[in-house]
Structures are given as structure tokens and as C-alpha cells.
Image (tube, rainbow, N blue to C red):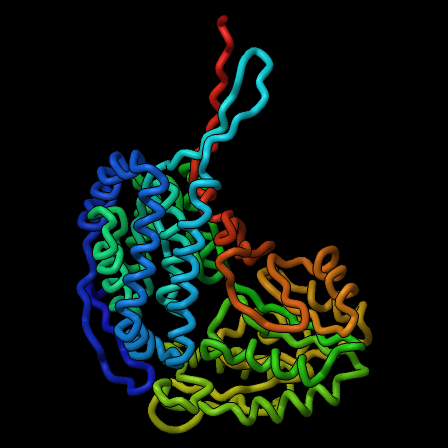
Length: 460
């Protein structure tokens, strides 16, 4: 296989840049440098590490236009959504800085012969393997919490956003983080897999498909190394008997097309009770047909191109396979002519088990519309999935919706009467085949630390 990779603009289909991959030895040298850096970085006071997180937030502000241009050019992100991604990353840095000292402070615990201390100590070099769909956020959400915790990190980014990988390392260094505290490694997946066994890699965090994620976890387990996995989903959004239908339609459209439909925690299966099915279907169809796809820089563009040609082909194959199994087209579901890897906002109905549109993740702007007999049946269908990342419930009875969310909906995150992405102060992560571990909300900063008990016997 070639030792070079090209980044391609998915709107123009033009080559942006060619990158030479690091050799295995060069990647291992980077890990050695990260480990040497860790020896000093772990001794830096938490408050000083937190100040650098604020400096990184400032770097995002300063470099906003360059970051957005990279997002548009490398993966087709709609311009306004690129700005939102940067704002989220700024919020994550500021929140991490705010809570770091409290979260990582030593705790005094009862110990009958004397006293005890519980301490949260960094453990070493963390390997991150991250996808392209949120090319800044995916990296920042795991790396800044680990760095503030006192770890160092090496990161394998997706090959179609290697320009962003370079930019992130540059911003970390310009913010004042020491050399080798954070490194973007220009490597392929095979090299990244081999790095898991390196003696100085102490943990791995991965975001991507459940198939690859499970293989990463299996490899790490051979060496007793902890992993945090976020493995996508086919999130169900429930429209119950007493739902506000216009509100549900508006939120569901947003939840399906955001980030060009290429979002793990987004609305994908729309489970609507029989009572509301026809009304929701017609309104949803009308709204999805009104979605404009085109130049991601244009102000009136709702939907940009998919990030790569092969991703569009995979999505269309899943759609075609579902149709062959009995699903029906409500709108879209055809690859448009012309330049750019576009796929229109689309809806399939009569979606049932053993179809990709029901069982798997459709990573693009295709909605799976499913009729439920009643509210109980809707909840059953929602949980009938190997995934469990996010989901949504629409009901005018807020107390009922919250009760369902808390006790019946088996996912890590649930929206009630709305749609939202990640929030710095709330935990992010899933269950079942969507992975394990949590980021954000003060939880991610403790995922890769040694929770150490020190017991001091009173000798007086």
C-alpha cells in the first residue's frame, strides 16, 4: 500500500494536498517523546495545566476562519456549522479549565487506624484514534481533558482531514503546551493498531464504527490497557400519541441533516405512533424535500456534500438493500448528477428488522420512518437495536417523557422535545454496541487516571 494519502475536496472533487505517512519507527519515536514529556508534564500543577486549556480556547478564536476553511475543504461541512463546532470546542476547554482543580483534588476518606487520601494521578501516554466528521471537536473532546489531567497524548486522525490534524498540533503548541504533550501522527489505521501494544501507550480512546472499535478494544485488552469507545448508533426518536407534531418535525429534520447527516449521536430512526403517522409523514416529507444541498460556503445551503465518494456509495448501497427488502421511498434516495459527493435529504418507510435502515447506522442524510402501534410499541422498537448512544422522545406530557427516558430508554443520552449535540457540562457516551466510557461533564477527565488510595496509620 502507498505510503502517501491525499485529501480531496468533496464539493469540487479536487485534490487538496498529499501527505507522506510516518513509518512505524517514526510513530514509535513520537510515543517515546510523549512519554519523556509526561515525566515532567505530570508534575505541572493542575491550575497551570488548566490555564493552558484557556489559552487553547483563545487559539481557536484566533484561528477560527482557517479552521472553518479546513472543515469545508476537507470534509464538506456547512460553514455555519463549522463555527458552531469551534464554539463547542471553546466551551469544552473553558469548562475543563473551570472544573479541573475540583475534579482532580485529593480527597480525605475515613480510615480507622489513621487517615486516608484518595488521589487522581495521570498514568501516561494516551493513544487517540478519531474520525473525520467533527474534525476539531472529536480530537479536542478527549485530548484536552487528558492533558489537563496530566497525561500526554498521540492522535491518529482520519486521512481525509490530515490538514486539520496538522492545524490542531500547531494550535496546541502555540497555546503554550510543551513540545510532545500533544502530537498528531500522520499514520494509517494499520500503524495505529500496532501502536496499541507499545509499552508506553497506557490507554486508547477510539471513535468510529462498532466493528473496528471492538477490534481496538480486543487488541488493547491483550495488554490490560483501558479503552474508551464511542461507536456510533442508529438513534431512535419517538413521536408519541400526545406529541406536538410541528415541533417534532422541526427537531427531527434538524437531527437528521445536521453535519450533512454524518453524526453519530443524531436522529436516524423515527418511530411514530399510528395515531400521528400520516400527519408526521406528510410534514416530514415536505420539510425534507425543502432542504437545499449545494456549496457548503453558501448561506442558503442546508446540506453539504458527503465527506468521501466511498461513503456515499456505502450509504446508497444500504438504501438500495433496504428497498430490495421491502422499504419504500418517501423522498430522495437517488444520487444526484453533477460534481460533488452529494446525497439528498431522504426518507424510507416500511422499514423493518433485517434491513440496514433498521439494524445498522446510515451515516448520511437518510431517515428511517417506522410506524408503532402505540407508545409502548414505540418504546419497544426504540430499544430493539444493538446500539445505545442517543435518542429522543416527543410528548406534551413532559413528566411521562422524562420517566421513559430515565427508566425505559436504554441509551446514554436522550433529548426530550428537542434535538441537541454534545454539551461541555454533560456526559457524552453510550451503552451496548455504542461503546463505553464517558467524556465531558467532568467524567472524561477521570477516565485515564490512577485512582490511588494512600492509607496513613497514626503512629502517635
